Image (cartoon, rainbow, N blue to C red):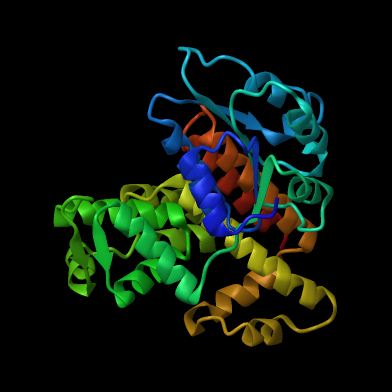
Length: 339
């Protein structure tokens, strides 16, 4: 079925046995991951999470069914998270829905899926599946999203505080959640002792999310400044920045570049394309350079590389933030070669 956000949240929070498959697609990967995490919390802290790379299902579509009907290691609940799925996961979804005995729910994350694609249409048509398109919220939806995350931590943000957090995080739910956790600790807030969150609290904690250090990494990478990237990554790490929000920020910037580059390749001057996008005046020159440097095929390859690094980071037993540094360094070298 095609679910509204309220329907999705209700089903996730109840860990509804009627839903075998949750298909979360669309460009807001952070939002999709946040929804998936709700299911894990609903199942309990002892629930076993099984992480699968979606690319592996092409050669082994039955793996999802095997995991969904297997007993957890210690006999409790489990859930299966499949990242990076495409339409080639359709057979795995069909097998899951057709299997008569399924013990555990499955979440598919497919940021690149099309709304009219085969997998989405299959999930929409099945009563035992939920399909939900995740987009970065804006306006009133963004305010509600921040307020909801804050409420879980015992915070009542003012409208301006919510918008500051949304703007500073570039809409990344993972970053917002991390900063709200810090603010709740600072204000000694909890569900049973709510506190107001206003501009004074943000100013006192300096909650600007390491924007400068993150921007330095993104700009150095996308402009191909190989000599600068190691230093920029070092400063970002020292500032307390985390790898996954950085990877997601780079992907968002590349997706924006992809849309602008398509216009350039159709014949429009790069400067005119950037001007029409109302880019912040401080970023105009660097954005023009990036649009002129990157070709569409190279942008697609870089997005794929960075998304694979994020999925590997989230997998159990991964190599930590080294994977992020390697992917970002490779992206920087690709930009340098594009001169």
